[in-house]
Length: 451
Image (cartoon, rainbow, N blue to C red):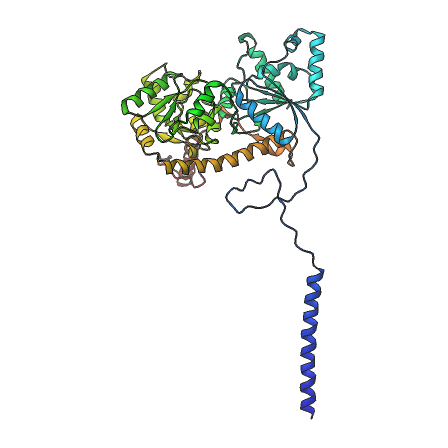
């Protein structure tokens, strides 16, 4: 009898414990809030290859800004116009400055009033191509933020007798952070450093990835002709090195078409099998633009370019940058945009004319589609990255402007190359070993475990 009572009590206890556990579990599920989806910052979501994720964020309401942009070339014009449309700021874009502003240096009161009016009516003054046009605004106590877009050498179109004064003005403006410098091409950063203007704090934004909308009768005819993409290579006939290319194509039987100077940009070039980019300047605006808009690009190697320069001395067009052809490999990749490791995966290099012909003949339709798909992925990333930097720079982003500045410890032209740094480390390593062994340093090279 006692055993039966004990058993029934034990069973009831177990049932009670189980019931209590189930009730607690149900109560916890009802009381716990649902986990909120992960939130991402809209400016830096550059994940291209992972799973697609929906951005859940509340954008900050930004005041509509008023931006003035001076530019003479179509590439920076196109890019800033694109951002005006995306970021919703008011854009005033000109390619010639008001004549009254140029008289400002002579103390004309009306001119000073014009400068003051622009400084007060705009939030940002952006100067691309010709930085000399920014001189009156740098000298004035300007309320608007001044952005110098270094798309050409800093003293282009500056009168010879005023170059020294303008360099000193920029040097002073940089030291007091009166201006912000945007550097798309390191060649012009290197050039400025060589000539005494050290730009060590800047925003490094790549060249425009957007295709300009060029409309004229020549472009319309060329577009409608629908060239054979499997056979025809687009070439130009502007410089001496391009004449060498045409001679090579005639010799090896490569079909080509010579385009006019205003050829219509990537919209037309992408219809051809490929183009051959023979550098005529270290930093062409068209290179990034073409890569990001479906153009297959072939580029000579550094060695072949140097060989051509040695063989045809003073004939190869380099826009007065011939001196950079004699630089070492590490330095050349600092100067020439087409040899930049960032660009290299998206172009095809050739070591001589015969090698170029072989690679063009092997460029099948399937291979071309694969390369276009790869470049398109890069284009999406590059557009988002450029937009992020410009958005932050113009005050439309969620990041602080200080977060996008690139600060160099040494001026660009005074930096040591990878080879020089390795030699210094090897020398230091030999001295350390010799000091421990108490004998003269050997000439043996040691691998650098930190590189």
